[in-house]
Each structure stands twice: as structure tokens, then as C-alpha cells.
Length: 445
Ligand code: ATP
Ligand code: MG
Image (cartoon, rainbow, N blue to C red; front, top):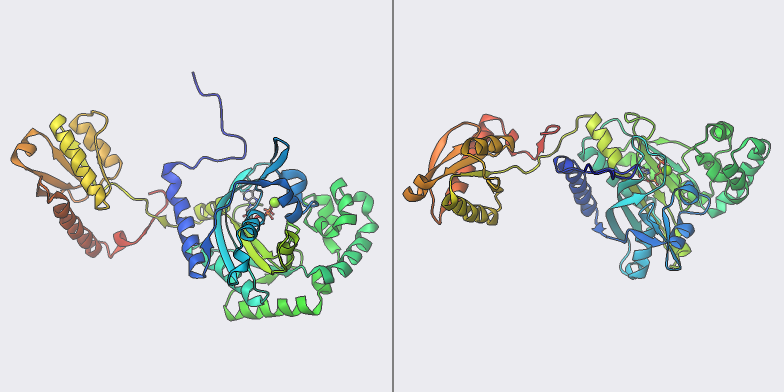
């Protein structure tokens, strides 16, 4: 009977043939973050619902429409819709913020949001993200933006624009809220239900509404950038200066307010126009009030989240290169039980030395085994049968050149293989101007 159960809408399977694409992003992101002093943190997939209500904010789309919440024995839990809240909770709970500042952590995790699935918008998606706590300097903002930019550059993603804005602090925002309310008041009746509610509680959220009508009404709304206090304004000027020094191109976009409530001062987005409407591959900013809001001291902090599936969409579109998936170094083709047992032992030794080795597990004939070795792209093959075993030697075949080298079937087998293998690698480098030594390979290879 055919399996009638399919994966839920808005989720994806990653198959072994595509895993190297994920590994490429994860490796580059990890190494880049670590070179900036960040260490990895791993937090639970679900948290107490209250954590998200108090951090992401009750008037945001995420909290109002997108959370997966379950009631489990009297307690409400939510699958994390983003990484910051749980990470800050963990930093507080484990006392990281009492240690030397700034504290810098990064993570790779899945997020869950009940959205309408479409290209680049999933219900389970993955983020590479990071948080830095302790510094109020605009240099920290520049550092975090430069880190994100470095990852995108190292992935060789092109045509990405960096937009920055400042959404001020609670002090400058109260004036701004007044101006916004006055602006929207006239056209209150045309706003969507959610935004009409937001008008009182959090008018800035209206600017982030996805409804075209609300967007049109918000077109000429006052801009927060014109209401910044002196501190926020000089912070923003410093950031721009540092980005200039780092030769990072940016555009100030006074319309970016970001979808989560906890942001203050700097917000930024890296956007591409190449993958349709869901073009924001990275979004982040400063959230100086969040740690205090969650019960900690007043410690300024900032961070970003990068959507891994969206990065992959751009990389596919731009034919970016990926780290080469590891391929079989040696395939043992066997005839008979004795040969199988020898292959099993030798393959084990090979793996101890870090080689990738395989032998037949399907009881195939010799021809079918060689066909299989070709299919998996084995670099070398060796045929083992009764003759080879009784003579104590066999022929190692280089699958690319077809060249055969005799090799003894004894305790020095792996060392001898390694010699031949290294010679082969060196020759290939001379032949192909080094390409085979480089970690990247093209497309789906
Ligand atoms: P958007 O405006 O696209 O809805 P957002 O502001 O809700 O994004 P953030 O909460 O800032 O997104 O999340 C950071 C990043 O995670 C986004 O820039 C995007 O790359 C990715 N992301 C967010 N939501 C989704 C989703 N539903 N599916 C896939 N990736 C997502
Ligand atoms: Mg969203």
C-alpha cells in the first residue's frame, strides 16, 4: 500500500544529495562567526509561550498569527518562531551575562511560523543567527553587519543590497508615535482590523503591515529617522562612518521597521531582488531593552537572523559553488565469501585512516559492482577474488585514467594505497591546474 502520509505543508526534506549545500553555508557561517569571537549556543526547540509574548511583542504578526502553540498539562509552549528570545533566555538563565562582556553567541536552528507557504516562505525554516550582548557602541553594530556581509561574500552571493535604518529608542519613539497616530487618525476606517488595533497600542507596526491598502495609506507617514534623539542620531552617524571605513555599501531606508517589537536604534536587512518577493535573506538590529524586559540587567545587545533556505534559493539562482561532497576513495569489488571478508577488514582499516571506502552489500555480479562503482564516482576500484587472495596481490584501478597499479593485500595495504592516492592527487593538480585540490565543485556534482 502506498504511503498516504505526506510531509506537512510548508516543510521541506533535505536529501543526502543536497546536504553538501547546507554544509557549505553552515561551515562558512560557523567559521566566520568564530573568527569574530562568537561561540555556538544550542537552545530548546520550544519555550514557554510567555517568552515570545514578552519579547517578540503582542502586536506583531508573528505573535498574533504565526505561532505554533500547544497546551501541555496546564502549560502553554510555543515552537520557537525565531532564535533571539530563547537565546537571550538561555544567556540569562546560565549566567553568561555575568561573565566578561561582550558575550557573543551564534546558532543554527529551525524556526516555526504559521504563514502561507510560498517560495522562500516556509512553516519550518532554518536560520543562522547570532547575538552580541554588552556593547552599546556603534562599532558593535558595524561588527555584526560586517560579519553578515562577510558570510554572504564568502558564499559568493552577488547583487545583495544592505539597507539600514534607525528606529530610535523609547525616548524618541514616544514623540514619533504621536506623529504617527495623528497621521493615521484621518484614515483610520480604511486600515485593516489588525492595524486599527495597532493604532493605539503600537502604531509603528502599521508600517510593517503586508496588506496593500495599509501599505498605501502608510506611504507618506512620518519617518522615525526625523524624530531621533541626539544619542540615537549620533549612534546612527557613527555606524555610517564605520561602514564607510569598512567599505561596506549601504543605503539608508527609512521605511524598514522590522517585524519584531524588541528592536531599538539600528535595524538592517540584506535584500536581493533575484528570488521574488521573499528577498530578505538576513535581518537584524539592536535591541537594547530586551534583556531587561526578560528580567535581566540593562544590557544593550544586537543580532541578526539569516534564512538558510533563502540563501540556498539565491545560490541556486546564481550558480554558486558548494563544498565538494566527499566521494568514495576506494571501492572493493568482490567475488566470493573469502574476498568479501577481506574487503570488509580492509575497508575498516581504510576508514580508520580517514578514507572513504565501500564494498558490495547487494550480492551483485562483478559487472554490476563495477557499474555501481562508476555511478558513485569511486576514485579507485580493486577486484578481489580467489586468485588475488591466494597470490596476496591485486590491481588497483584509477577510474579516471584507467591506469592499473599492483598492490599487495597485506597489513601495509592502506599505507601503500595512500602512496598511490597521493601521487595521483599531485599528478591531477599538475594536469588540471590545481582544480581538484580546491574544496569547491560546480552545481550538483
Ligand atoms: P519577512 O519580512 O520575509 O517575513 P521577517 O522580518 O519575518 O521576514 P525575521 O524574523 O527577521 O524575518 O527572520 C530573519 C530571516 O529569516 C529573514 O530575513 C528570512 O531570511 C528568514 N525567514 C523569516 N521568515 C521565514 C519563512 N517563513 N520562511 C523562510 N525564511 C524565513
Ligand atoms: Mg515575516
